[in-house]
Length: 129
Image (cartoon, rainbow, N blue to C red; front, side, top):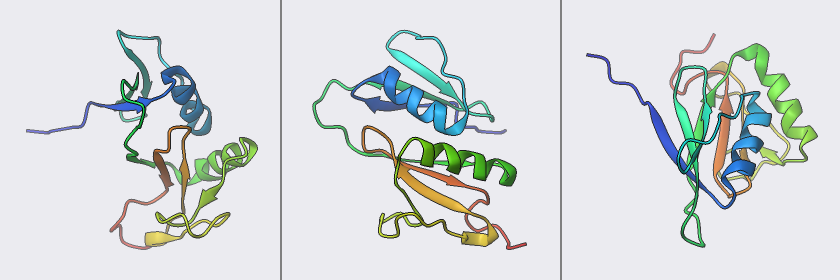
């Protein structure tokens, strides 16, 4: 039996703006509102369902996206055009750098609600080239 992640809820101050932010960066289409959610569907069918947070403070979460090597530069250019600072590390101590973990490339950046977004071209633990 295969078990797959289907969706997760992402709390945001403005669900539409946050979904559109990540959609622009990753090149994904924002879906139509569905109840209290604005869906953003990834290539493997997992949906990030953006919901307006009831509480004032949003607990930051981490979301990592595995992208094809040939799309990394496109995504990085979108991050730069948006004026978003990116980092090579999860502690956000190496601004403007990319990492080369496991023989791939990766960056971290924050979304408008403080969620840590990560874009990588190789899964962690993958054998180097």
